Image (cartoon, rainbow, N blue to C red; front, side, top):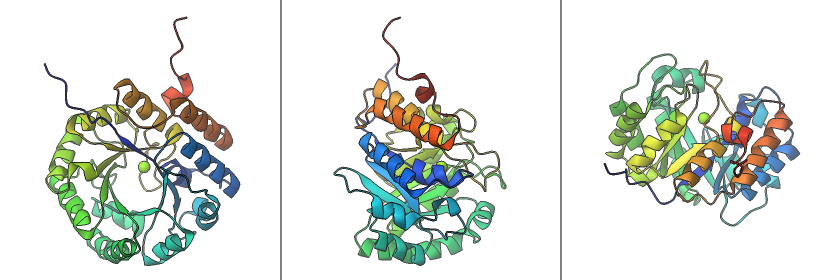
Length: 305
Ligand code: MG
């Protein structure tokens, strides 16, 4: 029996400061956010989503996006990215000097209407000029496609629908398409069907996977995706996150757990696991919440005892 051909290296995309903190009940002050991001960067993470330029009233936890971006120190090998909903948000992001942006839509009509108050087609029309303007300004663009393995309102979502939308986002100029299992519904074979369908429309090296660990399937899903050659993985340190429009959705897969898995497989990430674990413990303590990373709880394995 031959082992799947795994990628030699994986790009970890840390979404904790944005996807994580936007779901916290309390506002984390700007200085602590910046310190959190600094520690993440020191851990060797190459891409960190640091802010959201949605309307401050929509996500008050991230209303200090400009201040956060203004205090970040540029670091070689680290890209700071931000979520952008529209042209207004893009102008704010450009002024704040982010290194890349992310736009977003969902593979579910109902989820989109609840989350961003417009349908899928309307959201694509809204995204198109944002992508064009961002690229003209020299910024790489990633697109999030949510609910690719199921919608909390509509139920199952077909892989063909996901692939078609991912293809259209790619054609619009989004250089990376992140497939989001927003409600953590996916299991490995279902995930593989979605990734394989999408790979007909988007080059495999441009597809990222974004799992929530709601039902404990995230690492199994990631392993399955690695076997297909996926090499971009989203995660949030300490398993931060959730989604206010996806009832029952728990946090993102924990970056520490993914980094531990990849290290054990000999897959390069550039991440210093010990520092990452410290960062997860730091943010959990600051927020006064449980650390949802199993590796973060246990630490690295001790020598024989
Ligand atoms: Mg997420």
